[in-house]
Length: 245
Ligand SMILES: N[C@@H]1[C@@H](O)[C@H](O)[C@@H](COP(=O)(O)O)O[C@@H]1O
Image (cartoon, rainbow, N blue to C red; front, side, top):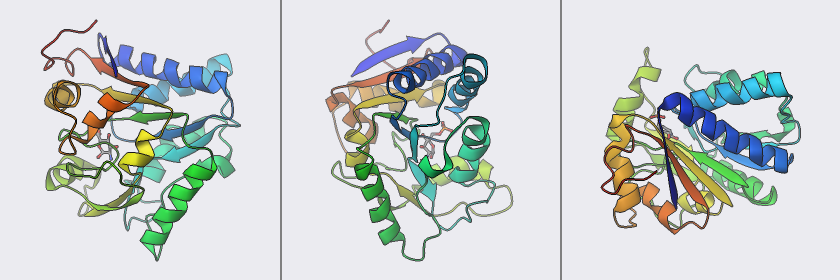
């Protein structure tokens, strides 16, 4: 696992966008597994700029989302589908047939999870997975305790995660469950990039980088990955015992 510390959020976003752009330039039909949350917003903004200014094309790229709330209508303002359309897909030349989301409203959610896992596998697996990190070390919606061999499945959200995400649901209750790509699904990505910004991520980052590899801290699995990079801003890196360049 490599760790890169950038000066601030803007530098982090630019570096992350550079990595995604390089993957897509090298392989225009790359398969990407992408996150939501506030952290990747700057990266998406930069990717849209690169598309507009330097002609970076995503027309052959296949996109999968890491997760989605269970039971939210797809056009709900807080659904991850809405987030991705608004912040990325509607602003670039993505092919709608190559954009995939977990189906949070499927009548049989377990079957929808299996279909999603199969779709990722049939696409050849992810060339690049970009992750954020929860304050409790979660990746996607794999909360502490998620088995390392888990696949795309329905999960119950930690109460702390529901509290943090409550600001996205001003007029209602935060869903209790979600569909997430599993730990093994994520780990099988050929390259993984985890982004963390701000002091409130410092403890989770330190546990993921310097603590034992443990299902208690889902992001710690990246220590075992052959090609994982953490992009941190200085605040997110502030809990690390050993300084990194
Ligand atoms: N399911 C998402 C995660 O994929 C994301 O990484 C995390 C951190 O979000 P933020 O970047 O807003 O801190 O929260 C959510 O719960």
